[in-house]
Image (cartoon, rainbow, N blue to C red):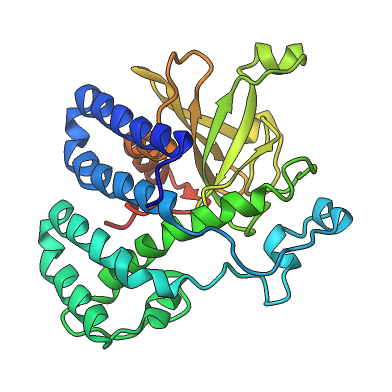
Length: 305
């Protein structure tokens, strides 16, 4: 039996701790937090048990990479993650009951989806393709929206686990792009973190900025004062939206391309919350940004629920 690594145990504990704190601080968001908290925790357990990247070794050309060719663009199979369809039926048996309990209005649809997977009416290959938005099969009793949401959440732990292995191939190489260095995905979250370095300016201004991939949760550094959507660095074009009561949370918006990105400023926090729970607590900021005409660079799983 595979035992949890210290990192995995810490990640799960971080989700549980951040969730408990958020429920206390933001009771108005309890329905959302209580729905997604258990799902995030179960996905963390699946991610720990997932096989990671098991296919042919990827040889990354440092020159191509630094010019913008993300890791999966170096593969011979067209730049995708490895097929995880064989693991999805077991993942469905674990996650779909959690989803049914978290989203009772959709419980019948999740049950119908589980039966379709178990009977073979929905093949693991079609389920995986749906999770990546490549296919939209019809499943009786399940809406296309529910199927797309469930499939995406089923493949997510396996994608994130593979990305952990792939990031290790380029961790020491410079990456200056706004897309993910592993899969080329767009960010849906960012964070300011103090790091151990001698740059006094960076340390004095809250630390380095990290972007987080909406697809595989990979993080990478990026310019602190710059729009990841269009590259704008003009102060008059960049807007910061904040709730005065929660100064560590913000939405960085750009007037030029009308995009925004949630940001967690961890500089003054004693404990850094789990990034997914932090993004959940920033839903009011995301709504505020959208009401002002800005669009997210990439959506979160709960954005359309």
